[in-house]
Image (cartoon, rainbow, N blue to C red; front, side, top):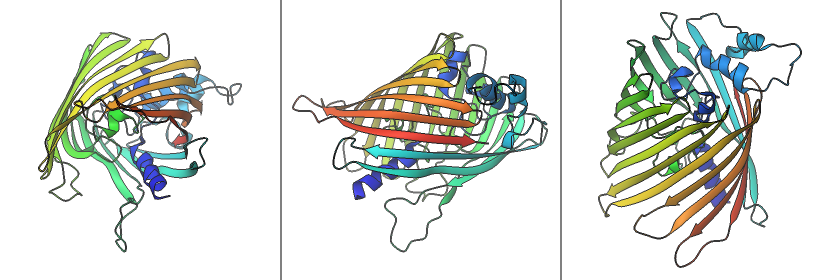
Length: 384
C-alpha cells in the first residue's frame, strides 16, 4: 500500500495544469503558444482568442448543435460561459481529477480516484489589453508522502504569479513565479521528458523571462532564483534558453538548454525537439535530450530520454494518441526503460476535456528484462 500511495502522489505531482491549447495543435497551424496564452510558452490562463479557438475549432459541437452556432460558442467562451466584454479582471478556475489503476491483471492491482488539481485565479489587465497584465492563481496541493508527523503543511499553493509586459509585438518581459522554459511543454507530465529533467508541475521558479517572437522563430532567455518559499540551500538557481524555428507553417524545430545548481548538486541539460502538423488537426512531436547531474559525494551521471507522440484527429473534438518513450538512467549503462501508451482524448463541449490512456512499461538490459506491466489512467478536466 505504501508504494501505491507514493506512486499516486507522483502521478498527482507530474500531471499538468495546462488548458486546451496544447502543443499538439500545431496541426491547426498554431505554432507559438503566445497565440492563445498570456504566458508565451503556454500553460496557465488562456487569452480571449485562445478560449474562442477552443470553443469553435477544437471542441466537439455535438452537444446543442442545433441551437448553438460557432459564433454563439465563441461568445460564451469566457469565465462561467459568459460573453467576452474586454474586462479588466478575467477570473479563471480549473479542476482535474484522475482515476488510476496499476498492474492490470495482477492480484496486486490497485485503483484510486484522485483530485489532482482545483485552482482559481485571475488575469488583471490594467490597460484593458494584453500588452500589460498580471496573472495570479492559487490551487490545491496534496500533502507530500514524506510529511513529518505532527507537522502542519498547507494544502494550497500559488503555482504562478507574475507580471507581463509586451513592449511591442515582437518583444516581451515577464517577472514572477513561472514555469521554466525547456523542451516541448506537453501535458503528459508523467513522461520521462518531465521527470528526468525535474520540470514537473511544482517545479516553477521566481524568474525574469525575456521573449522574442517573429514570423519564423521564437527565442526566450530566463534567469531564475528558484522557488523562494523553499530553503535557500536546496533552492536551484540558474538560467535557461530556448530557440524554435519554423521550417514552414506546419513544421517547427527547436533547441533548449538549462543549467542550475544549489548547495548540494548541479544539473545541466539540453534537448532537441520537433513538432509537425500532419493534415488538418493532426500532429507528430518528438524530443531527445540528455541530463547531467552532479552531487558533492558522487561522480556526474548523464541520463538520456526520447519522447515521441502522435495526435490524430478522428473527428472534431476527438483525438487518438500513441506515445512512445525511452529512458536510460545512465548512458554508460545498457539498461533502459521503454514505455508505450495508446490513448483517446475527447473535448465533448467547450471547457471540458476527458482522456484515457493505457500504459505498457518494460525495463531491459543486456543481462535481463522485466515483465510487462500495464496501467490505465482516466482524466476529467474542467476549466472555466
